[in-house]
Length: 81
Length: 81
Image 1 (cartoon, one colour):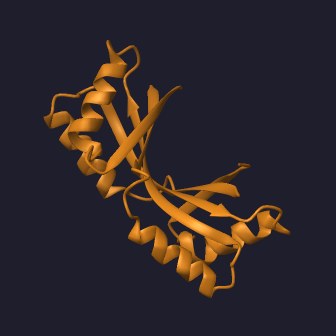
Image 2 (cartoon, rainbow over the protein chains, first blue to last red):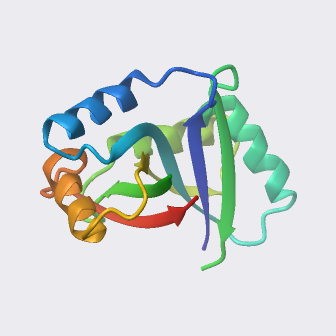
């Protein structure tokens, strides 16, 4: 069984209110050394081995389902098990 | 400015309904080679350089704010900029 890790995060130009809220909460807790927080998602996907054109298929289903290409960008790594 | 990446995911023993929903959606889209999907979060945190006891502080604020230790586990890596 192979595994692919897909990392999805907001584009740098997009405001991240969740990250800002966490940053100010960390300041209230006393962690003033924290300057900025950005939040993203990881999808750990287990799949059959030896799938043909796997890179194309991963990019395809990421764009179709996992990522909003208008405000998000993604990267992925295939981890052989 | 240093950066730490905190990876938060559900413990393996915890059901992941979001991941299951994504998995069945991928099957409907024809990606039958996908066997299982688990969803997690990444926090990219920028902070001052040379913070004392930084590992302890990261673990502390993760347990206090970013992670629900009952159902989630986390790992982190410090990326020097």
